[in-house]
Image: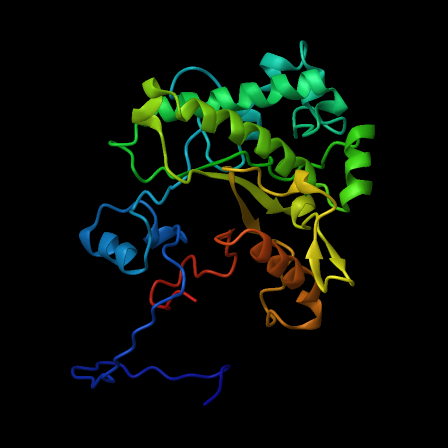
Length: 298
């Protein structure tokens, strides 16, 4: 008997099952869906399985939907940066918002270094979040505790002079997203503090971004003198009151090998750095069983 060979007993009427008593309590509070059985089923048994596996609920979302317009149509909560600033609406008037590589594929997170345009960009992004908070008041939608400005999938980043200067300074293009999120977060937080917006206010609201593809690398460096990772300046640290959370989607991991293997060394180091600077970071797990329903979730 080995992994290439197995036998099947046919016509079995009685089968003694092992008396398993296994309890596994993970050290994280909750998870999102894996797929298939865990997703949007209305079957009672399957929904209960989702709860047992610590999913938030059968609809699985914890981050706000962002809509490209003023109605709840076509929104997204993950790869959604162009939902905030649709090129069809802003490319002609504000080309600085968009990547030099592909304006229909990615934003320019520095607004080409133009301070006035950057302020307008962050204001528009904040207004989209505020709109979604109005769409989903706290009492009716308590599960929405986060919002993401997520890079679009499978597109290269901007290579304008300002972005390249940022890359040279911090060593990672992810710096631009953190800087932008800080400004957006400060504006949304100020809006939530207004008395008339109390029904939409979330405590400890999370401002998220994808640490994914080009943004997997954190903008921090090893300081020999201090014996720890540190930042070039405070711009890539969370601003006061802004709860920034990276959503680490490490598609470069070799899931066929242990985390501490040589092939995973670099990306594993980056994962540890993100966790050190941002406790409570989210993780996108590419290693789940999407179709093997009888296998335990790893």
